[in-house]
Image (cartoon, rainbow, N blue to C red; front, side, top):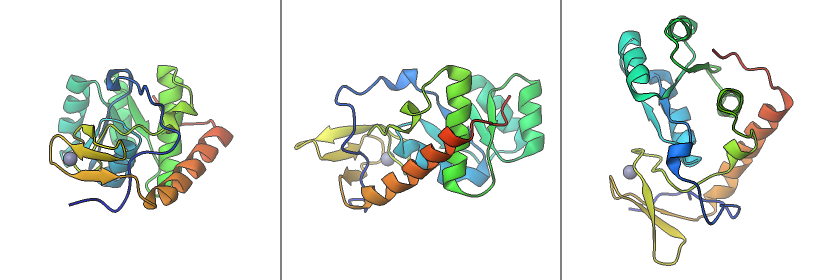
Amino acid sequence: MTTTFSVRSAGLRPEGRPSSERPRFLADSMHGKLARWLRLLGYDAVYAKSDDDQLLLEAEASGRVLVTSDVELFRLATRRSVRAVLVPLEGIERQLATVAQEVSRSLGLDLEQFFEPEATRCSLCNGELVGEGDGRHYVCISCGQKYWEGSHWTRIEQTLKSAKRIALNSRVARTC
Ligand SMILES: [Zn+2]
């Protein structure tokens, strides 16, 4: 089976970057969609339906940035020195912009670089993608999902572009 969207833009840096340099994310159960978008950007992003205590433990143990819209959970994370970002409940562009601001602020990553997609993650299962044949096709080593560079990428790029615009225009993020 091949997905209906692609995973890479024309602007992909050919040399890529090791995924270990990139922040990893743990989204709470409200943010499965946001986790998939983070994967489209090449980030290691999982989401869990666990309760607050389990989420905090998992974020603590894994070093992942906790992504939530739950103010109470965010406060608990702050108190336990778990890196967390409080994102708006709705609106994928504003959510991505908020995550980008937090990551650029706390990890010293360039805000614009955050939005440069890398074809490294399966948006379905978070597995790593490897190139196949002509360099326009990819396959997930975990679930076997195939990806290709298709026209749907244009729409994805529009969303990323507007998220980037929001991030650059309003640099105030509520973070710990
Ligand atoms: Zn997969």
